[in-house]
Length: 281
Image (cartoon, rainbow, N blue to C red; front, side, top):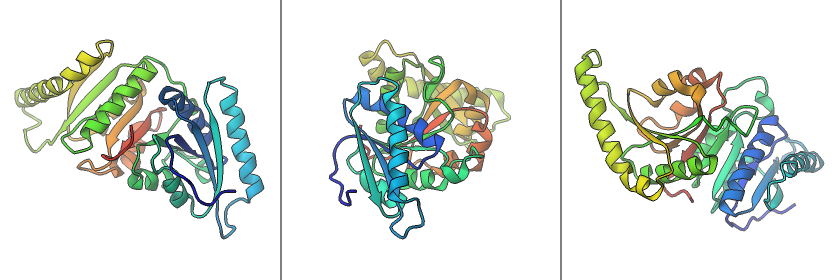
């Protein structure tokens, strides 16, 4: 067991013995292959003995390794068993990582589809993109879209670039969404709403022009939504495989990891990536 971790580029996955963690490892393996970096599986043992012991952690990591190897993905797999508070050690492991991946629910939430507290805390604190993997399968329907919420925050360009990377990796269509405040326009005025939507779509298309010139193979749709990204997901969630948002967005990550998100996505397998503006790509 190693206590000091040297930061190095990798896709890091937290392994806690849950089925959700194994699904996250399988999803992350594709990321690691695409980025030509190792897949790093990390299990944390509580130094005070409250969590499973080292032998149990080793078993759980082995199970995840076996699952990844069964896919025949050409990925280098590294393992770490660490001591300490899980969130703190995973944050350390994620320093300099290309991405930190975590199952949406841990062993204590196996019967629920609500996003667990560990995933929420990691998404709020990590300085790399955090992928919260939901659902039972890491390989969604290729027709399911990648949704990117694009705003004017410093993280906007990071979110967009990562969304492009994900759409190319998964051969999926991309939907780029701009959310506008319903207080700006009377939502009961159909003509005013349509005018606002047209203006925002035009702004998005101008911002996407360079991306489309670089990647003409991308299928991209610009969408304006009033109120909240969840308004879109509540109607289209079943056709979405992945949502990308910036961590410092106006409403914070609580919207995407809290009860409203659960209500919008509870019967879908839609995963979430939360990006920090300093996040690695």
